Image (cartoon, rainbow, N blue to C red; front, side, top):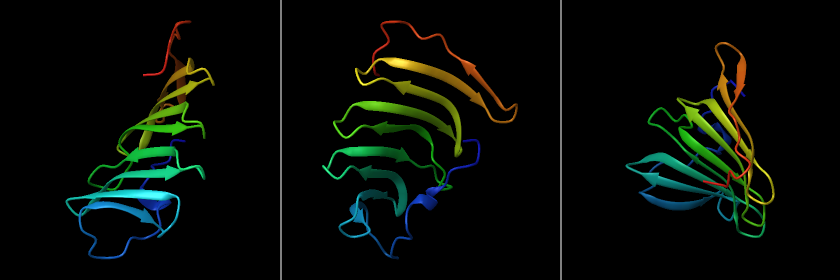
Length: 124
């Protein structure tokens, strides 16, 4: 989890794409958003068309900010917070949308520090 994550999970895009939303590969389960001729967001979909994962990228092509993972019914299941392509926090949710696990991740120290989870913690 501590290895840097880049846009390498996406097959190479053709040159010359204009800003907009594209399915990639054509007809595939990935939707990319191009802004200012760079990749700021990637969405991967379940076969039923609902979003499975959503990632945002920084100018260096590394995942940045919250990356969300969803079940096929649209329920939030996992959130990972990235800084410069490295995970710094993990939040896991149960099927009811309640936060079950919240950890701060320090890759340099190789530690995971639990954050107290309140019994009433709902999805963000």
